[in-house]
Length: 194
Length: 92
Image (cartoon, rainbow over all chains, first blue to last red; front, side):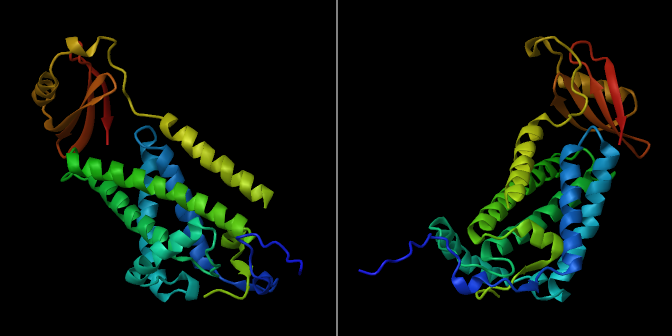
């Protein structure tokens, strides 16, 4: 009987443990990511009471998100958007694999990461635009504008939490600090990856 | 890695705890129970009489919050449902 080394279900293949580092997240993407994260956080805690701060954060988001959208087409490889239809098609399978602890490592965004980032960008546009509309003469005190802003903003925060939990989960599974990767831009090259 | 996990845990927990507790706008106008409140339409009428174009009225805490426009400027007016006195005005 041969002694087999018990393999943890989420073990990274030996080849993927390569320590060679490769640049993944380009500088504009990282700056956009953290600036947007900061603005969203600030905006979340400042409605009503700190109106000026809340508005500045919202306007900043309305500048950052379109830049991110453009960068999603002209940026480096891992900054670019995938085809949303393709992401939708592979997403159920990926989530199932993830639930079973069998999801493979992606160097850039995995399908879940792609999907949630695109969803967050769409919701941020809705939240930002509806928030801006609220303080225009035309749309001030219009119920559907206020409701849209509230629900879109709540949805953004729900997705932010899911995103943070997802990053944490994949960091543990892949034994790699994904937050640091988003700060430095570098990741282990590994074998798998695209 | 431990630092990352604790940092993310703290941030997530902070968001969950602080979310509902985050500072709210003006919302205390009266201690009177809701059943004895004057109708919101009277608060709206008061705002109209003061020259505001009324867009919407909401209940905010124990206040009637009236969204009014006057001379092209945006205002949130907080009336007490007890005596319809104007408690607070925010220029947007």
